[in-house]
Image (cartoon, rainbow, N blue to C red; front, top):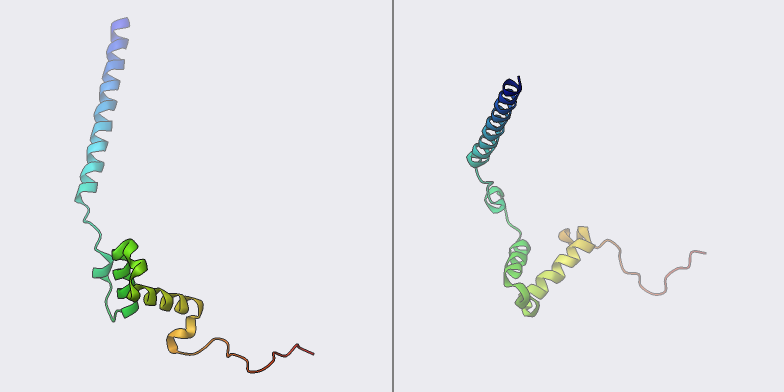
Length: 105
């Protein structure tokens, strides 16, 4: 009786190992069959903002970009656009006041 029980345990263990191995192989084959995602620059179409191109160049320069006049100007323009979203159209968000500001009385 002991032998039949041992054989059953061995058979179930081997069956489980085969199923797990097959599952691992299936997952690996599925991952290998997937295509690599396209580069973001290849997906984008349409006009490219020159500022974006300059900022990408500065990023590639690394630390030396901090000494590059073009990069300094590009970062200044990027900050200006970020802080004043309507600056792209050339309009100011708040017009500067001439003279003394009113105190609201």
